[in-house]
Image 1 (cartoon, rainbow, N blue to C red):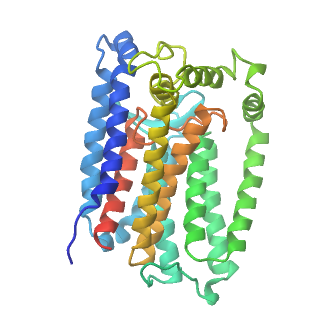
Image 2: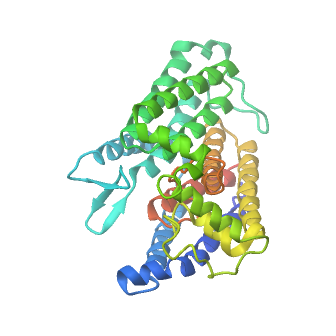
Length: 374
């Protein structure tokens, strides 16, 4: 079998990473100089994370899938434990009211990023075991009627979702939770289970989301402010208001690379969650359109890789990873332009942050691994 890399897919990822580093180079300079006396601190830190991501992506690309399947349960268990450890005061670091990071010296890591990919892969593996690995290349899977059983398939899946929801709800990380749930539902639906399974699962998730919103009053306030940001423009609505100002001021072609005014402390999390607003300010509708096209192409190539997968696990894994990265991208973009509430999740491959870009690169490595064997 002739094995080779899917270069078209890889080029899309490299362009996204390069654009992220390019914007970060100018965007992070004022804050970097203010805190560290060095205009390149955040840029070099991001390059370091990208280098680690490439190394782990290469490992994910080279590892035989049969070995990956064997170690997946252990990896998922480790990610669950790590996600619970952040809740302990001695280990977990709190930022912006949420406990999502583990600090070890000068190194911080967000376990929920590892949980995203391990949960997707573990569910893909579990469903492939329950439903069988065989597949006719280029066709959709059809689950056997004997497996359309509530006890064997649906109820364990709901329990799996409940476990993920419980862990991330305790971290107060509804943005990450929404991305994982969307990805897991996509994997479950693509596995060939009956449509009514997925419909009931979605309704169950929606009920759980409403319950989580009612438990914490600030979530209700955030939702109300999203519907009417001018109600509290200097409080909860400040972030969305500044984001809309940044995007709107860019016009068609933008102000020019490096000329953003919002990066000087006006827009919260400009390097991270709000970087798309800065892209809109500096490159306008044209630059925003390029980002949207790149993520759309990422999803199209992901579907093509899944379409040619030779076994059920590979098919479901690619569907899950593609859905994760693209849904996170569009939720991030939607929150920047007022379509969704501000969620606090990064723009894949582009936003500043080591944990998310390392996890995303591992996902890309696995997709390339699957594509070379298709």
